[in-house]
Image 1: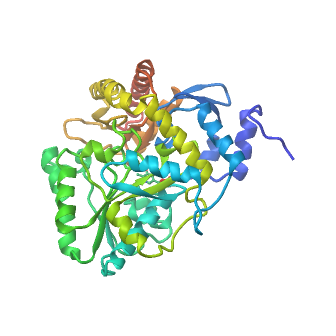
Image 2: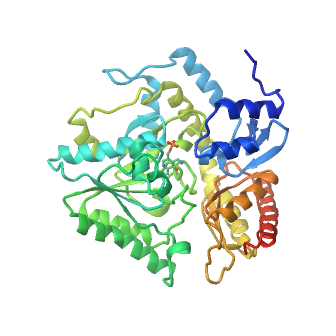
Image 3: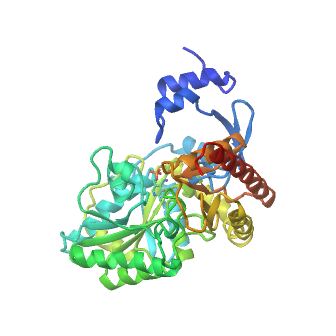
Length: 461
Ligand code: PMP
């Protein structure tokens, strides 16, 4: 048997990876022809690869390493818990200390009367819980026909059958027979791409009012819930116009439908406050959480539920749960992560110091000839690439061609920045410092210059 270690030559690791590892959201043949970058270690905001390159991770992994890499305290919390009680379930009249402590902590942190947590292993699982939970809630209240969940096109809520159905990604629905029944998608508040001649404010209102139109069309007695990310993340960091969420809230209140805020990305400091719902004035009945809950150090997700929903659900046996719901090691890691985020003032500093600094620098990118708009919410940002800012034009080439070129140039400049179609997005660890932000902007500018030159050379703009 080959002993596979960090010290192996990159090409050998890549060959083994190509032979036996299937990557998510990846064309395997294309990747294997190029070889995957092998990440070997990380500290703070910096990744190191098997060739010794140091890469600034402006995506915090997959929007999750809010605390930054390399915090020994989390490793120690995991080791302690593994030695004491590595696993036990919470199904059959049992519980354990880490899950009690984390639930209490989350009830304190979450706004309003969101006081009850149902755990999952990931954001996808948590949103699957939400689908069954809201439908069961209405059935318990004697309204079993209230089972339609309204979501948005270009929303991302996960990759499992249920959560990908909730999401509005056409490419995902095209594979594997999605969506499941009784999920309805309205349009997204993406002004840059779809706002036409409206002002962002008019457009935000119009897109929110599609929720009311959908409720009236489907029937108030059929609609169970609306789900939305406070800021769409994987859809391209679409920061909604200011008019959007107040109108959504008004409509949910008016028709008494449950409001689910998917805080998987926005939660735990990403938008500059603990939850995106606080930044946008949303009062959800349920929040989906994952990612920043443990800063990605352990897989854990969940649904934080308000008092009334918990009361109704507690009156029945909800036939739902995962082997790893409330996993003690993941709970211990999450607790330690929350302790550090709070005690070191990381969320507060992200909101009051880091976000304003990043905003000023990020919005400066709009002066680049390739950049149409630059949007930012706390520490998540996006820029739209365009061949013509004035008309908000799309490239003639397939959507995503320019974005991919730009991402390749970022990669070549030791910057992880992701592309969503022809938008470039960032979501760095909350601990990023001002000098590191300067480096991020310098590398992004170099990559944009190189991408611009390539697009011109290749006749794409
Ligand atoms: N909801 C949102 C808003 C997400 O961004 C994601 C992951 N990117 C998910 C749900 C799914 O989470 P997971 O990948 O942990 O299943």
